[in-house]
Length: 469
Ligand SMILES: *[C@@H]1O[C@H](CO)[C@@H](O)[C@H](O)[C@H]1NC(C)=O
Ligand SMILES: *[C@@H]1O[C@H](CO)[C@@H](O)[C@H](O)[C@H]1NC(C)=O
Ligand SMILES: *[C@@H]1O[C@H](CO)[C@@H](O)[C@H](O)[C@H]1NC(C)=O
Ligand SMILES: *[C@@H]1O[C@H](CO)[C@@H](O)[C@H](O)[C@H]1NC(C)=O
Ligand SMILES: *[C@@H]1O[C@H](CO)[C@@H](O)[C@H](O)[C@H]1NC(C)=O
Ligand SMILES: *[C@@H]1O[C@H](CO)[C@@H](O)[C@H](O)[C@H]1NC(C)=O
Ligand SMILES: *[C@@H]1O[C@H](CO)[C@@H](O)[C@H](O)[C@H]1NC(C)=O
Ligand SMILES: *[C@@H]1O[C@H](CO)[C@@H](O)[C@H](O)[C@H]1NC(C)=O
Ligand SMILES: *[C@@H]1O[C@H](CO)[C@@H](O)[C@H](O)[C@H]1NC(C)=O
Image (cartoon, rainbow, N blue to C red; front, top):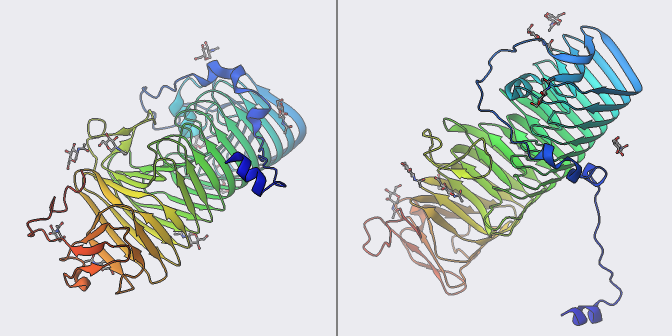
């Protein structure tokens, strides 16, 4: 093969485009002990801010600016800069160096204790050309409170240690990043993160690399907007989403190494209203069993527009009776969360070419609509127990089956079903629901057929309720 390609393309030199991130400058190996720290959230949850936030530099209720300075802090639970209480701050060409641990991770997560930069309580801050290095586990930029807006432009962010999110917003705060390069080596250190109850996170033109378990490119609690983001989450998904959050990614190219391209769930009662919108976006999942999109204990609406899901597993979507726990490294069952319900996912695909399967578990549901010249090569089947699938195709879209598939509500704008290539497989449909097919058997190109499967029929293998289980 080699000699043949060389013969065919003698002038082509293949090269790899190397993208730098801060871990190319400061080796994570130097900070392995920090990165091995397991974050301890098995402490009482704190519901109100316990004490004033400690910081070396404070801007309180006033307007201030700084440039061409190096600022640092080394103590535990101490920020380098705190901008709070209707303050405004503008900083440029700042180098910020922070070490010191968080003694209470709820204080760190909910109020930004120990963050390198904390902007709180109706304050606005703008940063341009900033270089932030943190160790021992500290967030880099934290935005807290309804009217707080933090803008971070041209930033280089390096962290070691747990819970070191790059851009972090909570308490309805907003954070906006442009031209960010961020690396985190620790556990639960997502590049761009929202937290309780809601954070608004916007990221443009950025490079994100997260290495630890539980660290995603985007962690959604609230809403996430990402545009032109190149991301790698070695031990997490591109997106974690806990609850009914909204995620819009445009022109992103992100790789995930654990759980799924997205892991969307609800940590307690099943939430609805989760929305994922991928436009001109590519997700690559590297794990042998990782789907492109994973859903558990949530009701979600998904739009894939001119987007790609490249999986090594051959699984595009999983909908499961499951959730993700605080350890962020496995699909949990009932014993971890007694509130579980099946996932219900509605996915609209346009202008996309997708290869792989839809897999639903234990009562979960996937609705899959192909429109706008989309192509799908794959099948749908149960991972465990009852699995419900509805599939619809418009006249411009095509489906190539890769195994027998049972669909509850099958609709096709081409009554001839000419846009379904069977490859010899059978497309079973529920005649009670897919009434327009009038219970007929329709021959498909490629030798197979579409056939009714009714619950009363004697050869209905599994009554459609336990299909391929
Ligand atoms: C900010 O200013 C507004 C109006 O001036 C005031 O109502 C509010 O209490 C102030 N908030 C804080 C956190 O200081
Ligand atoms: C800072 O936190 C670390 C890790 O928990 C602890 O070992 C150290 O004693 C703390 N330092 C102080 C001054 O409390
Ligand atoms: C924000 O306001 C609350 C309520 O007034 C106060 O308890 C808290 O200390 C303030 N936060 C900061 C960082 O000043
Ligand atoms: C930021 O600071 C770190 C640590 O001092 C340094 O190694 C790195 O080169 C700096 N990054 C940029 C873009 O200047
Ligand atoms: C999804 O993204 C497209 C393209 O940016 C946009 O037009 C559409 O409004 C988005 N949908 C939602 C639900 O946000
Ligand atoms: C599905 O959920 C069960 C727990 O209910 C879990 O054991 C299994 O690993 C999950 N599989 C996938 C692919 O999500
Ligand atoms: C399947 O769902 C039922 C509830 O309908 C639940 O009791 C059971 O634990 C689930 N099993 C798995 C493996 O998810
Ligand atoms: C079946 O799917 C089509 C297309 O999405 C929809 O219009 C119709 O209402 C569905 N029928 C049932 C019974 O769910
Ligand atoms: C077809 O759908 C009807 C209505 O949802 C349901 O009662 C029946 O069990 C289904 N048949 C099969 C074979 O799944």
